[in-house]
Length: 411
Ligand SMILES: Cc1cc2nc3c(=O)[nH]c(=O)nc-3n(C[C@H](O)[C@H](O)[C@H](O)COP(=O)(O)OP(=O)(O)OC[C@H]3O[C@@H](n4cnc5c(N)ncnc54)[C@H](O)[C@@H]3O)c2cc1C
Image (cartoon, rainbow, N blue to C red; front, side, top):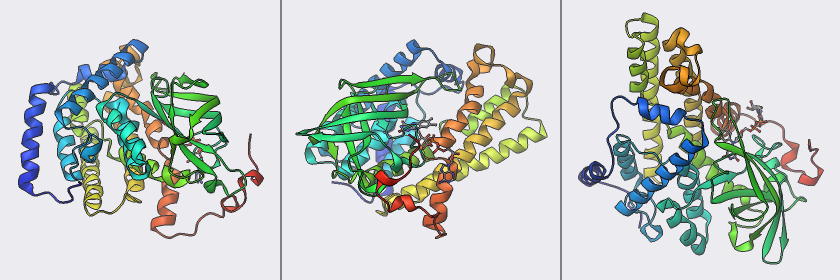
């Protein structure tokens, strides 16, 4: 049962319970977060493996402690509480030195999508394992010719008895090289308009024919991949939602993805203040102004997050709020990247181990484009807001009504 309203007493009792549990099981984040930042900046495979293992160990612990999937119904391993409780949990866990980053796709996108569209069997099979941290998930949506225009994807799935046979190429797939499961969009009907011929699959990444090749990013980290699918056989039971109804299912995933990125503040204002203190720049009037602007942005983001929470509490589904949040986070990432390098001054030109905190701040600057593109680019979020919130006339799109087979393609 999902609890829709919570009294302040209930929330504070939960906060006390979470605090007591965290004190026993986790280490408090130190005021000096240098070690943490160096770990994040690490670019070698050994450190990445250690990070994955640490995430898994921690998620197991959270699950056993009863804090995994705060809003997920208890029959699937969660707590069945409202988003207000989830918010309290996030506030408390943020004070501790723990990371569950490799589960971002599984917990943030797959679990809500399977809950909304899955059969009872699919829910029972995938949600408890994801909550326990046994399985890492990846998202196999984008293709070399289909990113912003995701519905233009050309990976094909053909029915063969009780199975589907999939061929094609995906790209920019975060964690695909370490994932156990993936969510996959493939074209199953070429004779209808593009949005109506797509099917959504749950795919075991250990199936023969799947090859994930890591791509190294400008930051030096290789967290995403190009993924090749050759005669990959997926049981029909792994179709999520209706055959050819995958676009609607994907909307649930994409809205949750935007909200995830929109709520992922990562660093706090305090980190920038510490950086300015380290470089002795807190008396510099220009840096002080930039810090004040950063503080304002951090607060605005906090309020935006609260607004989405309030909408969720009122039972309103995530809508354009997630595009607003994604857009604001993009701008925030760009300005914070500039701020870090402004604080560092000439030292900002160093990189890797030569730079302060092993190049963590240069990575923040370089990583901003990933944040601004991933989960839907800034331009695309503006299109969504223009059309769906402001009611502006949409771009003319003949490809929305013509059979996909007849649309000119660059392949
Ligand atoms: C860090 C990161 C992680 C990612 N992780 C994943 C993942 O795990 N799984 C996955 O499937 N994908 C992932 N992606 C892919 C991501 O969703 C796409 O990169 C994104 O949707 C943009 O698509 P594209 O790269 O093909 O760019 P394109 O769509 O080719 O866009 C190129 C440029 O054209 C602009 N443009 C395109 N169409 C329009 C329009 N209609 N109006 C105005 N401007 C337009 C864009 O804004 C952009 O500036 C990730 C990307 C990044 C950067």
